[in-house]
Image (cartoon, rainbow, N blue to C red):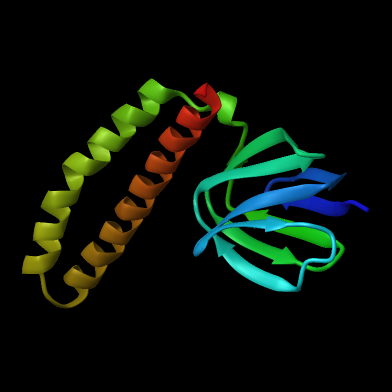
Amino acid sequence: MPILFELVTPEALLVSQEVDMVVVPGTEGNFGVLPGHAPLISTIRPGTIDIYEGAAITERIFVVGGIAEVTPERCTVLADDAMEPDSLDRGATEAELQAIEGNLPGLRDQAARAAGPERERLLLDLRQLEREQNVARAKLQAIAEIAR
């Protein structure tokens, strides 16, 4: 008895198929969804969704983040963005991560010295840059996983 898995981004419905199991990168850790799973809503972190047929992974999809809703019959992931792990470029991602990590200390220092509305703006910028850092790290991890 399979479970219906749907992956939706703001642009399109990317996947709608019956699967034996799906593993989702939840914020609190990966979780597997089988038919009959208890109802659950979870935020998801950047990482790879693994789709299983039988005991084998048949497809992997990298998601940037979003929300997952699970019912006994269905798992729906509303992702901010999604892409095939094969489309990720190690060199470009490493360069992006290096640039981000080079900018973080200066931004942290500016935020620590600022006050009022300027401090709030800098803290928002800092949170966004840290999120981009997490996404880049997750992309590199996904690239390493598919290289195995």
